[in-house]
Length: 103
Image (tube, rainbow, N blue to C red; front, side, top):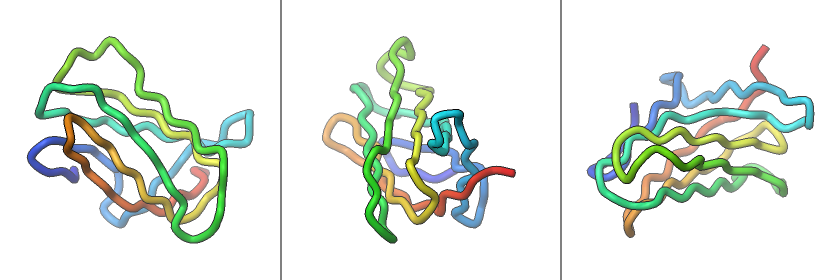
């Protein structure tokens, strides 16, 4: 788990590696269980740090209420080093992961 006073997320590994599942569309798909400790609408962005890459897709589905658990899906166009920022009510949580294709 990684977080602050407003947001927590589970990355699945202790070494910063995010194993993403290759989709039929060629994107590497990953899900983050996020926990919101304040009311608000969650937004998520991702930027590649070790190169250029366009086409990242983020899915923050509705139906989870204003606080507590929120599923987040991110589809990466390429493996590499990515910075992900989750934001809620003027507060944010940023973390960096190495995205690799899951075997």
